[in-house]
Amino acid sequence: MKQNKEPSQTLQFRLSVKDVKPEIWRRLLVSSDVTLARLHAILQVLMGWRDSHLYAFVINEKRYSSPSEHDTGKQNSVRTKLSNIFAKEVKVIIYEYDFGDRWEIELCNEPKNGGFQQKQSTECIEGFRHGPVEDSGGSREYMEKARIYSNPKHKRYQEIRELIGPMFDPEAFDLRKTNEMLKEFG
Image (cartoon, rainbow, N blue to C red):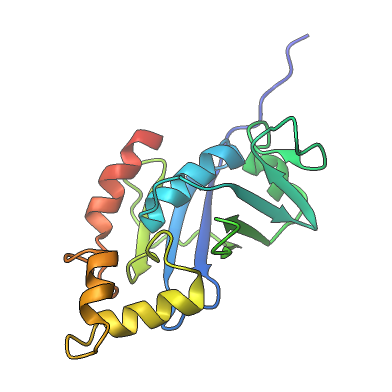
């Protein structure tokens, strides 16, 4: 007998990079059918990262990541859908990325605000500041590099500019460009 599939819903998250001031945040609309592995790929786009490090989601003290023969204690992020997570009244999940730099992003499930006109099934509707530069050393080192980068008279300015790149603006967030890249997620 065929079971009736629950229709997917649109979830709204406010996500914030922990331990970075001023705050880097995004507001995201995404289908409840999305798996945690797919959400990882979406978060990479939202932060401007290259998916070159390991990741995990922490939900009620359980860790979810890509399946690996070496990590038998973790849940499988490829098979776990957001609908399964949020059916359990979960309000916050933590996304960890790059275990060396130790980036943590807190995703808070919000009531969907009817004031936003959704154009695509995965969409960023608001955001503030550029995502942290990949391999920048974590939150403390990133904030220091961003501070130096904003001061061309600083003695380490040229070094940091070469490291980060000449076009980086820590205050900039391009919502239109971000949503163009998110189109591949439906």
